[in-house]
Length: 386
Image 1 (cartoon, rainbow, N blue to C red):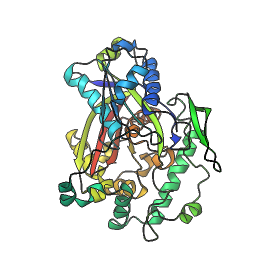
Image 2: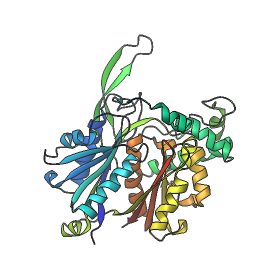
Image 3: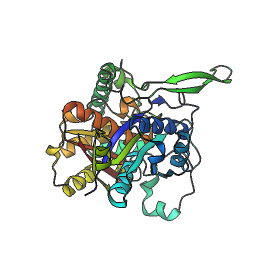
Image 4: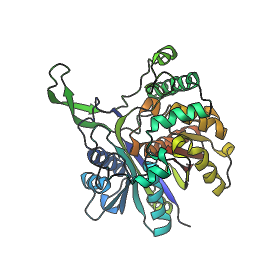
């Protein structure tokens, strides 16, 4: 039986949207760097990569194909870009794995990218019938996070406490160098805007670390932040994921091919599941996707050694963690998107790569990566850590 294993992983640092080192760097450029380094780390001839599957939300066009060319892959390597909102990067890995297991491909790249600073086109209009059928379908995700908090009793204090812990865990992991082996250094031209004259200029910059976290965060400081939607709401700039730019890429290979090459995979991709929920509480999607995934593989929550569940908002990820009965000590152990940042299409790939590397450090066997998805869905992926 064929099996898809992950033989390498590389990502950029995450930069603040609009104000960071990637604020003038297109998505395809960032992703090209990540793919290039992931392929190099796998010791591959670029021509051996059959296809690149990329998750991306905030750009138009086939970013995967463009990034593959920028990464130095030949024109014979194909590319496909997919959009399943915040699960796009994880879904890309699932599609790449399927190509290996079911379609006979030997080497694929699964990846994800987003530039919130440098968004492309999009849109396409809205069918009024969908608005009549499900008015909440177009609801901003921040509104759904407030609904989850009120509907399921996730207090502001609980959200702020969790957000502080995310910042603390991320700062400790950064200090311990736990992200160093993931991150590649990227030279950019960063746009600066003079606050007084509004004049724009470009300066040389280097993105070689995650820059969105706030290690000096305090509970008192979080408590002072005003809710974005008004005083009777919950979501603040401190307990929600940060808008950011970045890219991540993983090289997947058929297990026997990796063995033939003498490579030591990070782990194997074992399965993927999605599920739908009401659009006005889209943040609880993992509550439905995770049990479906585990049931298909004969596993229970207690069988999973490590969890990466995206922190879109503290309200939803707390509810999911507690509803599923996940041990907090093995959940987002090095912080999550509240501290690190959340380029929508990239996050699923980052969570997968980082989870595999952290799982290896911990001697974990089973890793689950999960996230809520805009429009009222959840996605979950299962990995075996080597």
